[in-house]
Length: 310
Length: 310
Image (cartoon, rainbow over all chains, first blue to last red; front, side):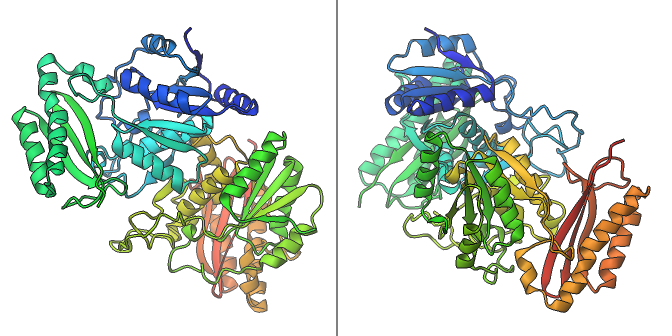
């Protein structure tokens, strides 16, 4: 049976509060839709952690800059419902709001927010009474994907807060594929004292090793073959550390060589502390190797955690 | 009977959730202590709006810059409890945490955040694993008090969010004396979809007209006499509008003249739209006149709303 779909935020909050008043715990899995097995594994994990699970499906304009791929972001809402209907093990509802930045506050004065090198997202065309509150996780948002996508994590932290306040969950599950996002949400929840447990879920991969992503469908067959260099080089780097390699310069060089050798355009290859996401020179404690690279017109990210006990 | 004092944030959240599970509604009045009749009127208002009221008493280092008066901010915790005990009409508890920015996460790497003209508050000495999440209400935070206190509203929005997430109230009461703060919290609650009603409470004044403030005790008798020029000039401006004056230049000039004539040092006199807080040239709709001025070493603020129906 297809899950119930709730589109209104007040109705969503009422539903959650009714569940809570019945003593039920609530899980949240925030998604932008076009669900793949990676998303479904997050939902399955949430179903083991909470009595009922809310899957939000909302492509958040607040995390896209006007030059990014908001309008072409893939979607298949009816397909998403079919996939969720096939899950068992607990109650799932879908929260699918139309626009979480429309406050219905009458006319908006148009102001130009685009000048002066300020970073703006796709929700900032209106001024005056429009949305203007943003959450900054000031250190963690800066590196890795934050360098090339300056509005991204501000938008993610803000929409996740909005979803937390609407759904009021007990636990929320995030994929570790978006490693920086997961760490940012964890830090935000700690710093803002949300009463919500944040769970990170391991990366789901295709059989050939490619990390699952809604953007994978945009790869041609040939690009996809070349993109396997990402997961392959990460696995090789991890094996190399196991054999004693501790120089991050060496490890990054090895990965870059493989990506470039597969005609990938490297955005970054970084080896960072798992919590602070600060760059590391020499592997002495737990790190994560993070990669972002373009194959054709598609930007892909992936990562691998390396745990070291000294 | 003195109110129960809760110091631990987990205990506070448990208390609130227990109240809610009994079907009780919860009011929150955030304060920095040293309670005066203005605060008490907020608590009284909360008691009429909710079944139980949490008064938080916490001097928030996140809204003070290192050069401001955090260490000398007045306090009288036992006196505060006596004043709250004298209130009737409902149950009050006090939330008095020790440090809401200490996450107990082991050692912190010291980093220098103070350079390069960045704005920093009193909680940013630690880097690495220290607090780093801040809420910006980007347009409303800029004018009025935001000009001379660049970290202030970032700190206010952030601590109020923390208190909202710990106390999980149904309604929160703020004084309109801090008009910009009240509008920022309203906007933040709208933009972040908090399920909390925000109530603004009229300014409480001493018999002679001085707006009540914890900082008033620092005025000498003579300074206090001179400071009456603030409320007096605001009332005169309002009367002048009632008689047909609509030029904000004229009105501001009149107020500045009185403040300067009383040896006040004007920080700002602004006439702004009540919602957007944008400056107004000609009074055509509802505005608020906001004043900040120094008398001796004490910076005082006050304001008066002028409602116009055309």
